[in-house]
Length: 251
Image (cartoon, rainbow, N blue to C red):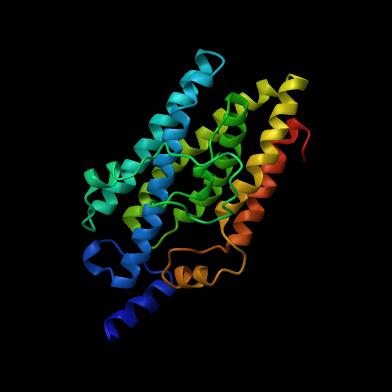
């Protein structure tokens, strides 16, 4: 018990862990939960964008969707490699869920998980066309950037390093979406369609930040797995989204 308390104090003071061998049981459980949520969201996101490749209006757009599909799967694989150090059967993990499965468009999950995997709730909703895909990608890409800045500070240093490595590629995914958005904003009809998609996706992406005043946040903060409250991350995303989506007529 003394050793566990000492490690908790060490983590609360900003300490880091470097190996599965020195990770306490509670920390291990929370760390695996965090990694599973990321991996499942990346695999579900990759599957969703794979379905969007044929929505693309041209070759450049097809390449962008293909790149996002490929790199999200790769990012999932990198975090799965970290999970393997904790005994995760990575081959079985990858095949145990239907990552392309989606609910009905009108479903309203809030932040709730659904089904047997740990994907963020936003990845349960279907994408209906190219404009819808671009808007979702921009909103979720900006959210991922905010969330990865937080995750890159986790107290398990091998995972933090992986998050720092993939953050620039995830940022590029958002930039690809913004490039597509610029083209969409050139047509009033397309802007109207994009605004409808924005109204649909905005609250669903916002829900990925969790609830304000979360008691769970305090637990994760003490373990060095979180540093910034949900509401502060949400506020930063709202600021970024308002600025980058201004071409659609929404500030």
